[in-house]
Length: 292
Image 1 (cartoon, rainbow, N blue to C red):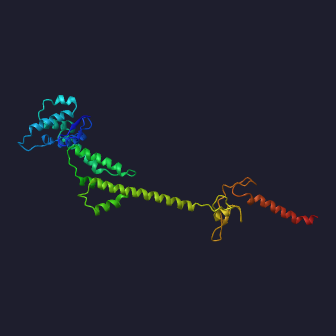
Image 2: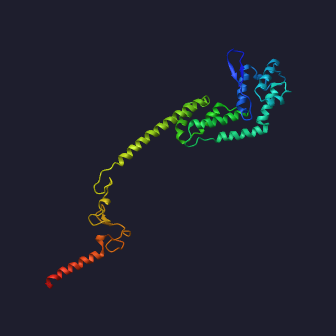
Image 3: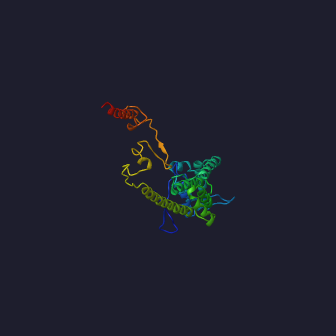
C-alpha cells in the first residue's frame, strides 16, 4: 500500500487503495476524498460549459489516478491526457452505462425501502445491513440524504421499538437528526429491553418455584395431594369418592382387572364371586345350629 504525502500540513500522509474488480464503490469514495484534500478534485468533476481546468493540477491528478488503478488499465488509458476522461472511463466500466446504472439504483432503493429489522436481530446487525445498502446507492451516484436514512431506520423497527420510535419522532426534529444519533438512542432502548427481560425471567422463576413447593402429603407420597387422590383406596373403595356436593361419583373401571376372577371392570374387593361366597357362608352359619 503506497503513501501519498500531503503538501499542505507537512507530516500528514494518506494511504490510497488500488482499484480491483470488486471494490469500485469504496475505492471511488476514498480516492475522491484524497483528491479533494490535495485540491485536485476540480479536475475530474463536472465542469461548466467552456470551463478549462488548471493544467498543472490536471497533470498531478492524471499521475495520481495512474497510481491507483491496475497496470493493465494504465496501458489501456495511456492515451488519455485529461484526468476526467480516466475517471469517467472507470465509472462507465464499473457502473455501466446510464440505463444499467439506473436499473441497479432502482433495485437497491427497493431493497432499502423494504428492509425491516427481523425478530432476534440486533440494532447493530440491522444498521450494518442498512448502511451497506446506503453505501451502494451512494456509489451509483445517488445522493442519499441523512434525513432519508434516519426515517428509513425508524420505519424499519419492529413492534417492541414502537414506543421509542414514537418518542423520537415527537421530541426531536428528524430533519436535523444525525443517523448515528438515532442509532445510539435505539441501542440504548434495546439494552433496557434486554435488562427488563432478565428481570422478568427471574421473577417468573421465583413465582414458579413458590407454586411448586411440596407440602409432604403422607397419603400420596409425592409431595402433592388432592381430595381425589386422598380418596383412593379408602372409604367406599378405590375408584370412588364423594364430590364437594356430597354426591358419590364413580371412575371408569373398564381397564381394571380383578385378580379374584380375572375379569375386567371391578377391583378385588368388589368381585361378585367374593360376594357370592359371603352369601353362601352366611347361609351355612344360619343352617348349622339346626344340623347340630
